View (cartoon, rainbow, N blue to C red):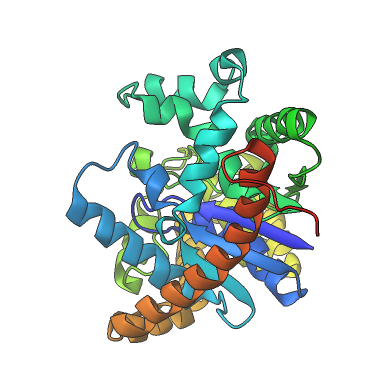
Length: 327
């Protein structure tokens, strides 16, 4: 069972990335799935226009994923651009993709509303994404509930291609990240680089604590009861604390006699305990860029071998290359 997922190199990784996706990727790896995880640097060109920045962000993602536990011996971890065949497949798929399908994609409209220039890359993005998935014969694609439309587009494109040329492409299924947490940022909104409200996975412990102590809370006096379900501090505590400790904090919130500062200090302690082994591994990897490059190149070699097998079938089916003659 092949599982595929990609991440854009667009900045520093944060705990929202970890609880929202990375933790589930590690679980799939541990369960023995055939995992293909890639750094989507072609996709990043829709919004990152400086070569040095793209290189920096790509290296950051590579170090980060390896630091939290992606194992190149058990998962194929690679750069998207090390498999140029994906762009060839994207063009072929685009010739079977109705304009109306792309015009209905919510992600394009959202990105333009967020201020990104409406370039063709943003509009074409779902087709390249479909190529990423289909070229490796992926069976499962991990997505959050709010990302299901992305996979539905891929499925529609694959079905239309197969109707035209035969059963060449594997139609993937969504692997819904049901346990993925929506992680609040320090301002209460969803944690996101675009909101500048993140707690980064590898930043120093002192900086993490400083950010947590700045989390905005209401003005309920210490002695008064508080609603844990409306508190950003508690929402983050619940992610990192044990079930028993979370229940105890919820009880104390409701009982009153506890200040938010006490909960913030415990939150900072728990998050830093969780992040410390990641930081140590990250620092080790930062000293060995050659190892990271070797991992990506070897992952790219394995991914490209799988992609080339698919492209041979696609080229013959479409007439790009002659069909093999029967002997």
